[in-house]
Length: 199
Image (cartoon, rainbow, N blue to C red):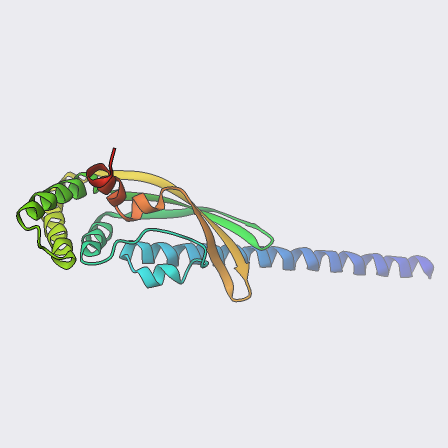
């Protein structure tokens, strides 16, 4: 009778252990699915260059550069036409997780640099021009140079790591490792520094 009781207890323990492993495995799979979904939503917003939508996918301490319109329109056009990305290597460890994102993007360095240089020359002839007029002129030059350069398909690749944290309402990106600004802004800052930054 005791042997029979022990057998039943042992079987019950095995069932409980198996159930715990199954539930844990299901939770981890669900977390991976949610992390990938968050990465997709974030990258979709980044490609569309929608500032508010990008912000909804990250925690408040995550910083990134965003070029305001009208110049932002040129960046949006570049991304929409050229940017491609793949999400892989989803990892989960408790309430922390990550996803790798490989991005191919249009290298707008020469486009922006020429646009800045042309605007500087224009401003020299129009020193009383206000900020709005200057930004509009940068956009016009950028659009013009981009039309000529877009056919060359000057592409670059980079890989990002999106670090995430799990909160009560889901997974959110807590840190972006890699050249996010360069990829999403088409090397805008690099071109700006080359023209305006004092050496």
